[in-house]
Amino acid sequence: MKPVEKNFAWNRGFPSVFRPRKVQTMASDGCYPESDRRPNPRSRRSVSHGGTVHRRRTERWPATRRPVETIGSALAAVSFVSRPKHSSGKRNREQQPSMTSHRIYLIGYRGTGKTTVGKMIAEQTGGTFVDLDAEIERISNQTIQEIFRDSGEAVFRDRETECLTTVAADQVGTADAPQVVSLGGGVILRPQNRVVIEETGWCVCLTAAAKTLVDRISQDRTTSDKRPALTDLSPEQEVAHLLSERDPLYREAADVLISTDGKTPQAVAEEIIHCWQSGDDPAN
Ligand SMILES: Nc1ncnc2c1ncn2[C@@H]1O[C@H](COP(=O)(O)OP(=O)(O)OP(=O)(O)O)[C@@H](O)[C@H]1O
Ligand SMILES: O=C(O)C1=C[C@@H](O)[C@@H](O)[C@H](O)C1
Ligand SMILES: [Mg+2]
Image (cartoon, rainbow, N blue to C red):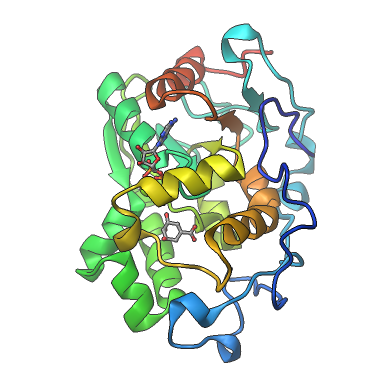
């Protein structure tokens, strides 16, 4: 079921202008066929509009999907997706008994602010913070750029799943001081990652218009180390096409969508903290 949105503009302005140069079908692990990979990451892949969309949650928990409601003016850009409860300590354990951790996952495309906002939430709630990309770099002793260059995206995705699984296994955080985990922009590509996210935390998806993302990514000083090209398209084309491919997956994984356009990271952090502390969908 699709979330109702406000200020949600991933694909705005990019419908037919930017066509992929070559269309490939994304495999279920979120990567492209090995045979199509070339050594240089910048020329390694093109993008697909036809990537597989896995409908895991509607198949597993059809009864828990509910219509989405937007909420009042203070949180006008927040959309609630259909999970029954989140993990702020008021989770309905009968419905999802495996959920015992107090964890906020942040997902969203590169540049939506997951790392920046995640740190703020942890600081302001007294919780702990984990950045999954930083964990992957730590266990690899390489930057993400170097992992892509030396080992390829498939190895990066394997390490991403490994790190996510490790982090998710910890029973950490409290309702007042949650563990905040900022995930990589592509973590939602693998169905198994989405299951882990679903079962071990409350998931907030940050969004922004494609142009906003291109601007933030190009201006961020960590981009050369952390954001290798994912296609051989221009930055603008890459963002537009990957957003269109990932959009359904972000929505599937998210409990809440929050637009970050025109908001400071602090304002975004406050929205998320407010939602977390309110303990349930405010519209209910
Ligand atoms: N709400 C915002 N307004 C303006 N700039 C922002 C906002 N959020 C983040 N930024 C800036 O965008 C850049 C990317 O932010 P950040 O690294 O937090 O994104 P990310 O979602 O973690 O990206 P990635 O998926 O690549 O790790 C940084 O320079 C950050 O300061
Ligand atoms: O969007 C993506 O696929 C990525 C986003 C970053 O967070 C990193 O995880 C890496 O650069 C891949
Ligand atoms: Mg980040």
